[in-house]
Image 1 (cartoon, helix red, strand yellow):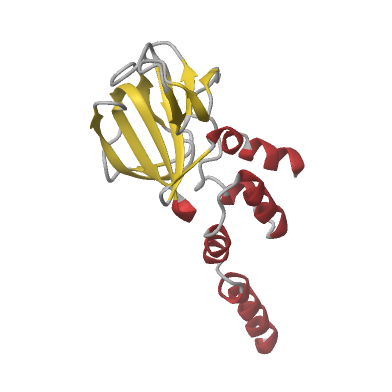
Image 2 (tube, one colour):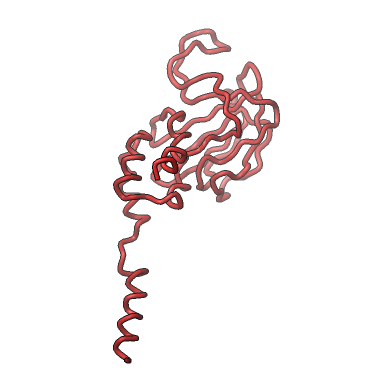
Length: 192
């Protein structure tokens, strides 16, 4: 009887200590990921649970997204010349809530003449989300935030033509098209 109890005690500890650390395994896979399609492949192959995704920027930063300007080349609304738009703009009313698109740590908060009031959050896998033209910020550099936390309010600070949220996803020195990232969590939940 003593050995049976010992056997079950060892099995219980193996379920915690004997399995590889999934977080480090997932982080290792995410190191070279730059597109939401690649993230979805990793999520399927591991398979990742919905509980393992909040550390990545995989939801919309506003409740009812109305995209007013997409990612890529466009005619700049102020300068009237062709420029590369490094994010997407969501047309919103002044003061509309802005939510963290993934859990992480606020690494920068400040003011820039172009971006106005901004917040940058560092997520798992080296991803960063960036929120600009804010009227009010509700977090500070160094704060930990969870996915879906109200972090700011929409404004028109900086170089703008009206109230909106400018939203970017960055990794390293690259700007990633945020639109498909915003649908990632929905896609994974739909496929489970």
